[in-house]
Image 1 (cartoon, rainbow, N blue to C red):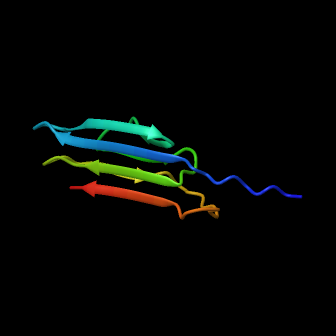
Image 2: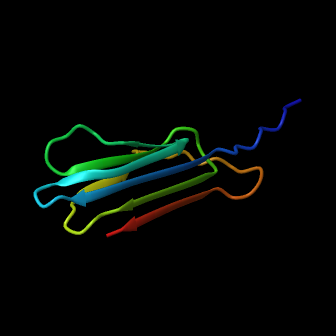
Image 3: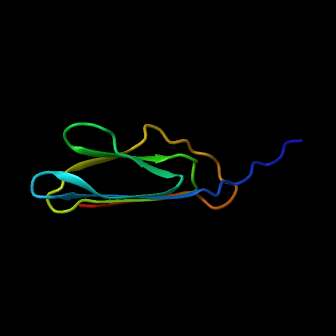
Length: 98
């Protein structure tokens, strides 16, 4: 007899902010909690941040504000798996402020 899968209850929060200091765009703030992670790749040129979900969270909230004059790229991982929920529907919230 198969046991029912346990519902996933992972929650994650991620926040990355960029500011312009008069010469270049810099990382102004970085916050990550639980299964939501942010990787700032080591690249030359424009600032970048990659949003990652490391645990298949039911609730993922991310935000990325840009300050005046800032220029940056924010993207997500290449693929996201989707699973059937045994409870409430999952939710992914992204807030981008330019």
